[in-house]
Amino acid sequence: MNKHKVVITGQVLPSALAAIKQQCEIYQWQETTPPQLADLIPWLQQAEGLFVTGNIKVNDTLLAAAPGLKVIVQPAVGYDNIDIKACTSRQIPFGNTPGVLNETTADLAFGLLMTAARRIHESWAWVRDGKWRPGVHFPLGIDLYNKTLGIVGMGAIGAAVAKRAQVSGMKVIYYNRRPRTDQEQLKVEYRTFSELLAEADFIIVLTPLTPESRGLFGAEEFAQMKPTAYLINAARGPVVDSQALYTALVNNEIAYAALDVTDPEPLPADHPLLTLPNILVVPHIGSATIETRNKMAMLAANNLLLGLAGKSLVTCVNTEVNYR
Ligand SMILES: NC(=O)c1ccc[n+]([C@@H]2O[C@H](COP(=O)([O-])OP(=O)(O)OC[C@H]3O[C@@H](n4cnc5c(N)ncnc54)[C@H](O)[C@@H]3O)[C@@H](O)[C@H]2O)c1
Ligand SMILES: O=C(O)[C@H](O)CO
Image (cartoon, rainbow, N blue to C red; front, side, top):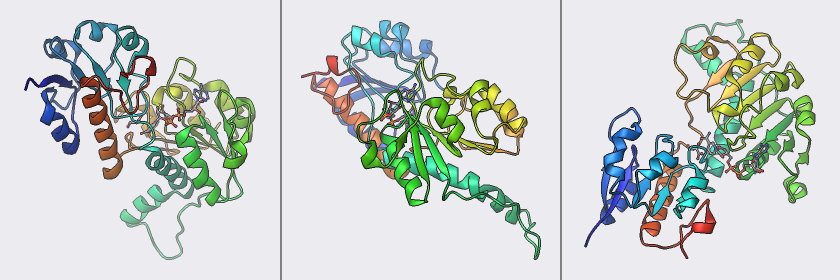
């Protein structure tokens, strides 16, 4: 049997790789630094499937180098690195992995809020550094209960965050491009963006990165927030303007930022944001649990194999070209 030729642009969990290898001949980028387009071109010329990892840009230039592509997949729900129009115009379905990571990413987003508010990471460093002495008390955190959480981008993950916040006694308000029809059931209240900025004690950002959401949080928005407010970004780095965030934190226009995602990513160790006392940064670990990363990898692998067989993907972004 002739095996399908598949290009994989980085690391893939063993379970998914084994499933792909059963039916495909793979060309996998093995270096720790991401490939340049020129590195992939010789492989892409033969490729029928493309499994994207490592935030590779899939655009017209890449697609032009891969005339035989039947399917593209990525083990992530966000797809801001993929030019969907370009895929659709070539009749190539693109599969992402929504749903399977909602609870895990919500845990991390709410965990960042709680860690920052209760200074868990700082107090652990305090103990480890031998500063815990009788009568010497660690600086105090702030309460969550009776506070207001504003969720910007109230989709699948936002709704899972809201449940966690409600258990902690928080009121939840949200901003989306339009109100959700199930907001009463979710016990959340809609606000305009400006209202939310002014009212929230904590803001969690969970929008996709699009031309509209790029730079959604800049100097003007920080000026509208409470000086005691905490900002948590678990969406994509460029939704928050890094320079404006630095200025707002230095000038105490807002109290604190906790970031799972940054711009740029990875954030260099000498980045100005990392010099600040009122910030917590983790390296894009929203979905990074054994169970969830396996589910994401297997869903992406399944989509890939379905697409190669000319069948409908389980989760497809450009459904108009999904196989029937
Ligand atoms: N940190 C991580 O590891 C991690 C993990 C998963 C997802 N994400 C990011 O979170 C995003 C959301 O994931 P999801 O599964 O909840 O998606 P979703 O599509 O279910 O929800 C996104 C919500 O954002 C709203 N929205 C879109 N543009 C907006 C804008 N400009 N202003 C306000 N609201 C806007 C949409 O109406 C929708 O309700 C993903 O696109 C991804 O970028 C990050
Ligand atoms: O969009 C997503 O699913 C995450 O950011 C990937 O880790």
